View (cartoon, rainbow, N blue to C red):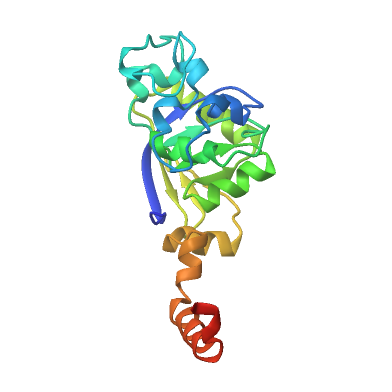
Length: 212
């Protein structure tokens, strides 16, 4: 996965609490396990005026003009501003896949569902927990400022506002190391590739009948 060290990105506000994973990526789109191609169906039931199905040409579907991500000022956003209990519901890994494929690299919320929170780190999305009061200020600033951007410095564990205020956040040291280095579970395993090859070579020599 791509490294996450420092990100300056446009912010999109999703001012809803308890956003579940079926809202993030509806169940009918879960047939694929390719990790890509889910972005066009992120928040599908909210973004479009019709009911989405796999294989539909999304370019021909009618967009909901009232949904925040369809507004021109938020096109290209990389940081999603959310509320408490984001990612609740079923434990589908497709939810962070859809966020990432759409272009989001980070989510800022008061709290997250545990499984979704863990899945984000495993797929290169940084879920940041901030107090409700700080989120309220961010929502207000985003609404008042078209083109509002934040800078996320993972190494220093800071969210930097345009007015100079720095918002510290906590992150597990191991997860931080993985994001900074771009290591998913496969990447972590491949760090030991030489030892794995040596073990397999030894096993092949000692038990050749298993490889006949």
